[in-house]
Length: 234
Image (cartoon, rainbow, N blue to C red):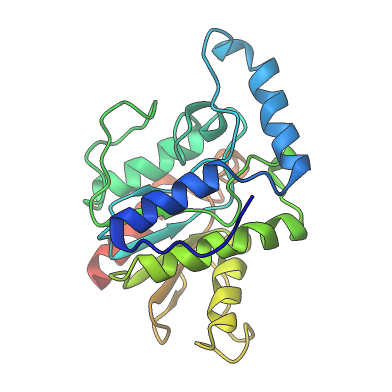
């Protein structure tokens, strides 16, 4: 795959970048896993056609809010082809986005269900579903240029919400590479922790994974609060 910089800007640039993401095959372990999951399927979705390849980013090209997740779910986004769509993590996220005014509806079942994001864009440091939801460091490095270029193309972003420590570290790493911060030290991760001194502002959240939501570490109200804060910041 050719990972050279896209020459298009704005919405055209984001569309071109998304096509490049979908066509990426740099991480053979992840490519094989996505294909195998799509072949075997989960019994509940045995009659559905799985996406089974890198999942592009999604949202409003004029967004002032950027949401950074972790990676597509094996039977969620890897099935539907849209970030946080078709699994319980997405159920939590889209309810919160709807209540804060960033989504047109409170649920996302499929890529064609009519959901529209308003003033928000969703991406991830890994665009392929990883085994056990754990991308390897080198796989995150392979995907990093995509996130870097999204920041260049999303010129209106004022607030970034990172979902989980991996997303937070990926975002801070890009800021360090860009020279926006001297190091990643001093930027603590925690739920609803705001780093107001950064540009764009960084707001951290626990990831709405089933591990977090089923244990009560993250409740719907806690996630709602994060996006209500993001809306107030904008």
